[in-house]
Image 1 (cartoon, rainbow, N blue to C red):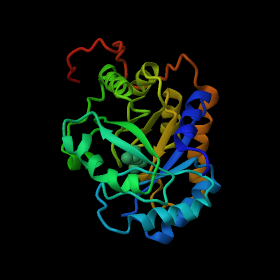
Image 2 (cartoon, rainbow, N blue to C red; image 1 turned 180 degrees about the horizontal axis):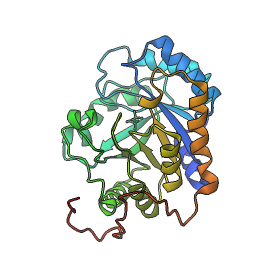
Image 3 (cartoon, rainbow, N blue to C red; image 1 turned 90 degrees about the vertical axis):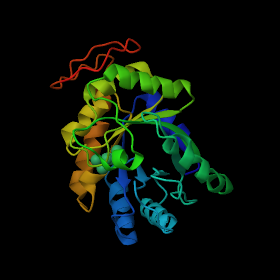
Length: 281
Ligand code: 1GP
């Protein structure tokens, strides 16, 4: 990768392309599996690979990133999606420099970042300032448990969009709406739509997306980048990767300014910045 990753990300947003990112968890796969997964991903339409884990604390993280990078043949960006400050590696093209804005736990707002910075600076790793918002997804997820934060209510698209805009105003170059890895329910389409209509920076959406339909809906609703991890874990199925990639890419032609995707239970039309008390469902 000679190009800066932020330029790639902003280029996707500006051109209204849709990109499909695969998440690989080094805690759940061997080095050989990571390389193989990355090879299959690149061969079947994946546009970039995230590497990270909510719990990984071992020294071998950089080896895992190197294994993934090897599998991509340097054709697609490899980004660190860190669960903590030890997840830094010079083999990555960039790191999503996350700040968990939906919570009030200072460890994940600034603490882990501060601990990571000396290493990140030493290796001159590209940082992508990312506003990370955790959205309620039907049950408690590991990211929720680990960060000890409360996710944003899934029926409050207005609140989610306002948090995203706050992130943008704070200087975040990217916003990530996260349902949590393995979530029962993905981020609601209405929350994606309202966030997309509100912010003017690229939007990443992930967590709980398992099917082509769900991936397609996330992209049509306004996600510039759709992330899938769990659904592809250990499943080295070329066809399935290609189907999911196609479901995301094909949304480019479908998305319009009128992204009125019909999703059950998503009828909240409260405009952003006019926040109302949370409704009980
Ligand atoms: C998690 O958004 C990613 O941080 C991907 O989630 O593992 O549920 O696909 P899944």
